[in-house]
Image 1: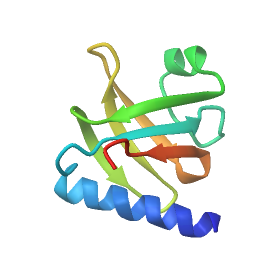
Image 2: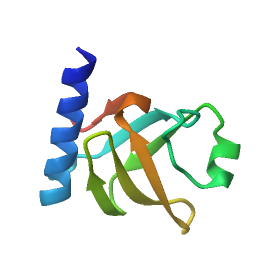
Image 3: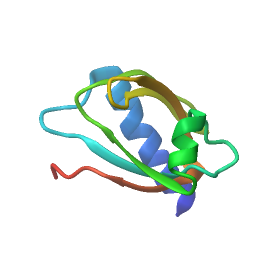
Length: 98
């Protein structure tokens, strides 16, 4: 079941990378910041030592979907920060528009 969910998330993000977010769709992604493969700025991991929820909506850049996770640059208070979120670190992915 976990493998199927990883595949679904990868497929959805691959479509977003190719076509953008359709209409009013956006994602709240909660992930484990302490996962050994999570990559985020030190100030973010200090602020969110266990988990973090990011919003993928109006501004994101460099979305690159891979086999084990995805990288993306998001804006935190007018400061772009690159992240790598492994699928194994996912806690939730929610699209509140559906």
